[in-house]
Amino acid sequence: MSALSSSTPALVCGGLSFHEAPVEIREQAAFSDEALAGALARLREILGLGEAVLISTCNRVEYFGIAADPEQPARRWAEFLTSFREAGAPATAQADFAAHSFHRTGRACVEHLFRLTAGLDSMVVGETEILGQIKEAYRIASEAGMTGKRTNRLFQSSFAAAKAVRSQTRITRGTVSVGSVAVELAERLFGQLRGRTVMVLGAGATSERTARSLQSRGVSFILVANRTHEKAEKLAGELGGEAVLWDRFEERVEEVDIVISSTSAPHYVLTRERLEQVRRRRSGRPLFLIDLAVPRDIEPGVNFLEDVYLYDIDDLESIARANQKERSAEMVRCERILDPHVDRLMAWVAQLGNLPGPGADSDGLPSAA
Amino acid sequence: MDERHWLALGTALTLISSGWGTFALGAGRTQSTRWNNALLLVAWLCQSVFLYQRGQRIGHCPLTNLFETVAFLTWALLLTYLLIGTSYRVSLLGFFTAPVVSLLNFFALVAPIDRPNPIPPLGWQLELHASVTLLAYGALGLAAVAAMLYLIQERQLKAHHLGLWFYRLPAMGDLVKVQRRVLAWGFALLTVGLCAGFFVARNGSVDWVKLVWSAGVWVSYLILLLAPSLFGLSSRRAAWFTLGGYIFILMTFWGINSLSHAHRFAV
Image: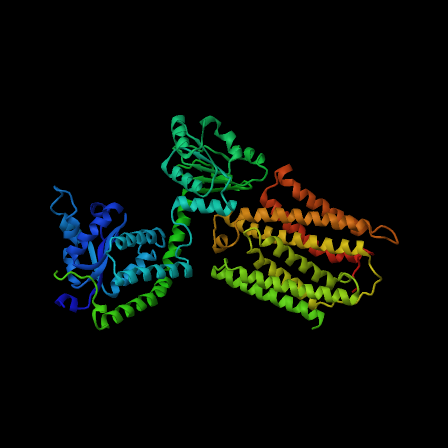
């Protein structure tokens, strides 16, 4: 038995995340899904890992593994990243990677992964996309034969812990972006969005994103009006909707359920007086107005009209902030839920390390660092 | 077990359901309505046993005094919820139906209104008239509960003050749908019940007090049903009228029946 394999292998992790590394550094280190499988072999070799999983998202590039020498990954992580850099890259790259990286071992590593999987370490606390990204990274590593009993147990336990956190707390409750808040409010107002019609005023990026979100929730038809009709036609074509001439849009408000407005007009494009006339012809159907423009497109007084609900950019942002605050307040409860999961995994790891015979050491660790 | 005990048991179960509902809403566990619905089903069965035993004992449909009438009304309210409320993604309505039923039943059990009223056989027309009309009031009651929830939601959305309740109560669109459908069912039952009343054999003069009151209630609900499409009545106003109309019925039912010689309760 080699000297390395006779020592207890340690769980290690580290990498670059948005906490320490600005986007200019992260974008140089990022891997595509296709490149991930190929990078794993080199990661294992350079960092001296027995088992390895590499996670790469827009907010982080991180490794998880089992190392006989827990110091080696910290020493050589920057070298690993630099080895993927194109020729001619700045010589400072390796130093930058090293300066913006973090490394953890043992329990701290387990805690980090569990927090990460539960969405507690995300830029948007409680977001659920990270779980899917970690599952995908784990699947790629597993199919490449890079995982073993320790990483398998580590990742499976983290998925179970994330599930417990989400089902027992309100960490994922409430949406935290302007577009998703608008979609959620529309769903609370109408029940379901299937069969609803949306009108987009102004072909801006935010209104387009919001319209697409509404479409993904079942909105059946989208009308687009813009001062430059060609832009309206282009966006309507992309959304599969209908372009409306700018001077005719008011007539069509009668038939829609939701209006998203983000024009650059210096004055109101929808006034209380005009909407009052439209409202009378709507047979009591509610109208949800989302004003994303600054200066505002819709006269604030329309919110006093019956069955008309107006939310401007400040309203939506303040709801998003409140939701974010509420999620942050749930963090303590989440940590408490994670603790026993971490304890159980650490107990299992300790038990495995104490097992006599080859069962305890079959880690696939390289024989030399 | 004495027949009143069955009603008391049903009331206790709806009270437990109310408590559970308050806890579930507070804790954000509004998805767990299956147990609550099971509890309300058992409560309804207990009330059914009460009504059956009372009917067997008095030899009539149990609507001969105010006590029996209230018990029948809450039975109808629960039945409407179990049949309709659970089907439209708004099973949360049960959390709010339970306190109304508990309150009315509690009033019926403690108030001295369970006076025997020995009366001759009523005839099937009269029993049909009374029972279907009360079923209608049960349905209209559920519509009023949905309307109340809608108004709570609407106020928050309009004022931009979105509390926890906004996310835990059913969506406004679902509540409007339930309110309108249950209102339509209630109105249809009310029409059948009132029409059956015309076939009841009368010995004396026409009961004008009750007739005018019933006609007023019927016409009001007809207008309420048609107003959104005919006059563009807003959902908010429709909800206020649905809630207000039902409170009016609850407040005047006993009084009007006291003034009506054919509907007077034994007290």
